[in-house]
Amino acid sequence: MSSTMEERSESGAVEDATGVPGALGAIDGLLARHGMLFALAVALVATLGSLYFSELRHYIPCRLCWFQRIFMYPLALIIPIGLLRRDPGLRYYVLPMAGVGALIALYHVLLQKTNLFEESAACLATVPCSGQYISWFGFVSIPVLALTAFVLILLSGSAEPERAEDGVALHDAPPWRSVLGTIGLIALAFAVLWMLRI
Image (cartoon, rainbow, N blue to C red; front, side, top):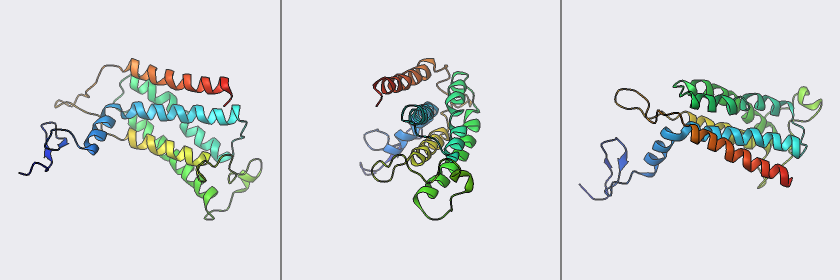
């Protein structure tokens, strides 16, 4: 067997001859252990970011933005509660909400960036859904940020948790420090933004 060929370790991860898991195996392992924690961080950043845009920057949300908020804001509460309770079915609550939110965000992005859809009368009444408050790098708008957040939550939340041979999830202790640390760091970052009025 060539020394450059990849081998499977006892854990099933693909390894090279040095015994180091391949990049994809490492990402899989990381998501299996911390996927929902990453989903929590994304949901918190998206929730606080939308509040930052509307409350600090005074960008008035359009109707489609409100629908996206309806599916994002609960995730910032459901995910930490599910993590702290070690709910094995957490992803079955998170993924449908993130999926519907992603579809709404995708429609909103296509409405803003293409001519595929005509703007509905509901959006024209107060704030047009095709309007763009930001355009970072020439293409990143608020709906693009929302779509990115929903897709990241879908990807990280759909990772299969690691399980021992008896089917019990590994890392079974309640992740108090991880959950509270994630919430605290993100809240602190947005508190600083709020105080600096950036």
